[in-house]
Image 1: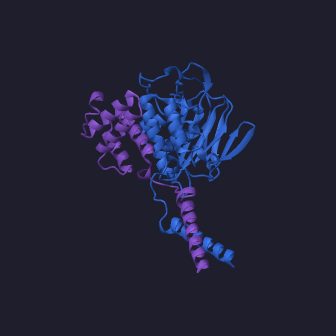
Image 2 (image 1 turned 90 degrees about the horizontal axis):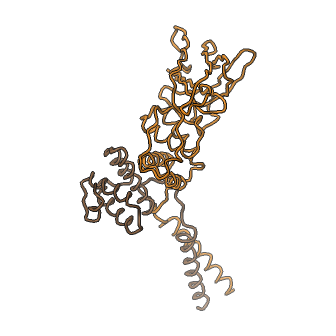
Image 3 (image 1 turned 30 degrees about the vertical axis):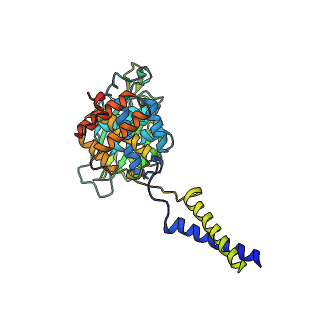
Length: 264
Length: 118
């Protein structure tokens, strides 16, 4: 009987204590860590880390700061944010800072958006020789814009907004397609048809969400003529041809082509 | 009477155990938090980043907006306090110079930062 009373008292006390500690007076929302920040704040912090890196060139410090944010692979997370900001039309200097950091962290140039001419890191950079040279430089190679049908595009369909070419150091030239809604947000699930003499393939946007919801790509062969169409508007054809080019390091490679489609 | 006393003792013991678990051993874990709840060490790191970024872009409005995220409408005192801790922790001189520059941009002056002012 006494043991039962003791056990009952203990369980009742434990329950009351837990209720008080978890419900009535829980630990305050203070003393949180960078890792617990909401996703959009983590993006802001990533931008801040990139801006600080652009100023001080301290890669190890930037890496440690990104690790504290706990977003997985730092290079991929920074590259993905650069892509997202580029797709949303953010200030080029901010995209450039992110791209520069992503490159320094080892992100493949093919994952990065065009950022224009890279800005040199400050001369106080501790290990300047370790800074890779950004290679995502848009070239002047013109790609003919496709002729659009004269009729207005029905709602839900996409119009080609921009064609960009890059001379990237990549094993294979890429066809990158970015589908956006009228506000510039990525649209996943857009089916893209790629045709070339003797072949055809399809892919969807959104299968690489780390590069943006509206992003999709296809590895092309050099010097081959391709025709790109969207399943939602099969009548509109967009010719693409990866051309030989010389990257900023003087290496011969082939242009990567990016088509950005936007809903009107 | 003895049983009731035992009950009270065990009740208190259980309550103490419950409080220990809820406050210390397994406290509530907050996720999706905002920067204004960051612990001091992380807040200092963010302020150092803001100072470094300001060194690069000299964009005072951007720095001000970033401080607002930390819940600091008047960033000056926080910058000086961060500098105090940075100095105590043996931070590199470049950090202190960046903090001094940022503090000056917010019209905050401290003898501590005078040697690092540009």
